[in-house]
Length: 539
Image (cartoon, rainbow, N blue to C red; front, top):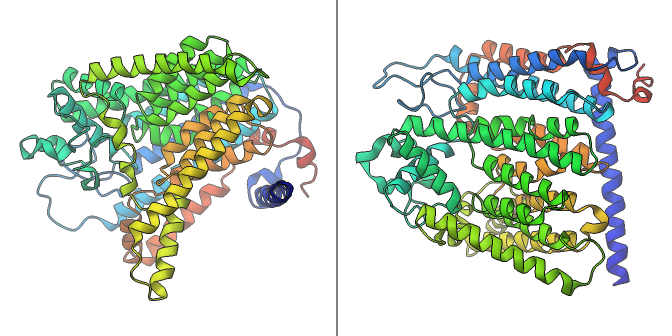
């Protein structure tokens, strides 16, 4: 046991050294090679500057909207009748414009980089200077969200699967048994946009989401495009719920609500994937953060109810139920006294899920479908990447008898088992570490050690860490938030193939423009995102 403890201390010290060096290296590059290095330290002058990042963020989002509106943009589905603009004409002939293709890439990547820079600097200002006016931040969130509300579904086709599942639900065809292709060609307006990977895959989503999904489909009178619009607006409401819940949570934890609001609701990952991609993770995260905020305010029954609603959207929210039940009776109590809260939590969860299942009409069949996303094999997921690397190595050694599926079953099991064990450890020590923070870390662990890592999954834990992070976790929160949207960016192969065959001069110009966005001065307000002692070190 002492040897294990010594090994853990060594790992911890190694992590601290590596993380500190990495963080310092990033700061050094920012000071030397970005406009931040030319500012002279000065006292904070108040929040009158907020209009500048508001407009810069709006510009960034508008660039992304413009780039995603070209008919041959690699960042969205290019199919007729899938949006109000930007889709190709039916039976279109001729070769797509190479210039427009590159312009789409430049606009989207330029907008992404500008958005990351603006949000990163704003987040750092919030960390150093508390008390930002929430009304102004809400206005900024609205401004930044408008282009994503108007834009076609970007970076993912999942919303078209949701729409098809809503159509199935409204006609009492169980999405827990059948995939969207069951609708057949007679409903091709729903079927055609669905990613073939999920065409025959049953849904892993909870019953309350299917109820909402089917209700939207009925309200739109079974119109596919308006169902997609309804789902997009549902996620907008969910992001507003995240914004409201995170301010309640921050106040309950004694943190600055303005900073938490910027880190959570205005997070690029949230805006781009939960609104732009219209992912139902926004509803899950919205209910979850409200539930955790109520738990902090010592309203455990309502907290368990909202966490149960989140679980009825996506199952990983059930981890929140465990943490709320564990902390209900307070710290430093005997294990037997925690049994009753867990029993009450189980009853509330079962009742909520049962009512949701009755509303949807398909029972609990979704539980057996929870690992259906494991059909995706991506290097972004460590458990999957390790399995693929092991298989490739064995095949290189002429050991072809070992199949990828069998290796992945082992590595993925070990990944999930590790996530479970680490979560149990975090739950056991959550009173000393901070239970909201431990819950956020647990959710991120389940994403990172799960079979598939999708960027929108990271939002589950990041929104909770926005109000509860400690120390270096702030740096990792920022890093995941600005790199997450680039994980598995769709159209990657098509993008590279297009660039390889494009005019070299156009490619060089595109690279120069995108690189210029990284060096564009954003205004004097960014100087307040650096601690004064660091600014004084700038030569």
